[in-house]
Image (cartoon, rainbow, N blue to C red; front, top):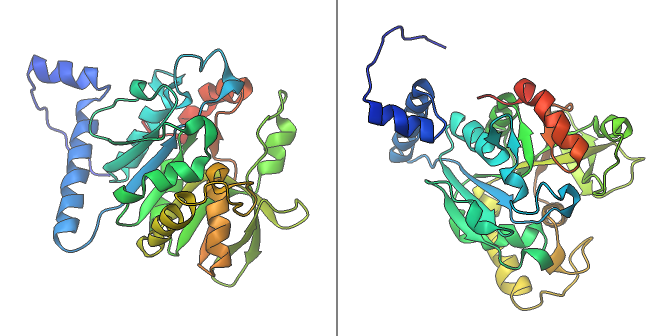
Length: 302
């Protein structure tokens, strides 16, 4: 990275605005440069990536911390989980970001974002939240859960990866759960892998631990070519038969994002695994929350 050693004077009103946004000046300049680069790429016919953050659910497992706020607004060393996610996405040049809200939705009100509301969040799964955001999606899109943190290298690798769908997975999931002192109410979202000469494919989800397995961390990229499937599922199944069974879910209404991945696999789409080793955090328990304060500097830029 080139360092520009020049002092730039700004007005006090500018300084106050930056403080209100929890930004420093160099960070703001980098963000603006990223925006200009993305606009230039779009003007040359290349579509910029988008991102959708799925943050509608209510997590009673972290009560009382989440009694009055969505989990994505939990503070970790002076910044919310969502603020840290926005920083890492924008650092990678992704500035078109939608957030699917539900529980305590009006508290998620950061400027410059597109909002989608899942008012049925108590009776629907993560797939419905994604389906509700379908009209926003018209290009390759990063999908992430609203309670995870990860490093810039992982996101950069994901952006560069090719395939119909790429899921970030962790083969170190067993040790994570074995080391846990509190236990996890939520079961890991497992994927079964097969290693090929060029990449590792995902051949099933929610599969047995005896297979070559990994945990989906809640971070993925969907290509533009498969986005019409979301419209098909919404129009022809969810809207007409919301109680119809859908893969591992008793109904499409309660289906998860991984149920959608299983649909992709059965339609013979290229679903690829991007493997990492425990370089991420999700906040499901009080132990996770305490650990996030200890580990955030190791995995999150900014």
